[in-house]
Image 1 (cartoon, rainbow, N blue to C red):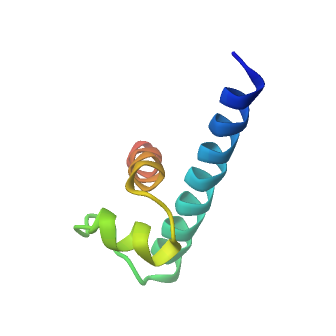
Image 2 (image 1 turned 120 degrees about the horizontal axis):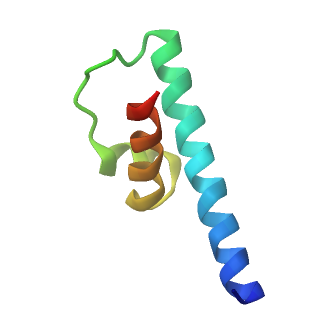
Length: 64
């Protein structure tokens, strides 16, 4: 893997982590309830990220 690809993967991972922490904190605060239908695009837009890292974060949360 080239250093450019590694940087891209690292940035994507960081955005996924940011999204994960945001949604998880929202759940723990009671702002979002387990089972709530979430608009990925809206959450991603609110965080200023693309839908892909948001989708990855939500998948991680589903496995928790």
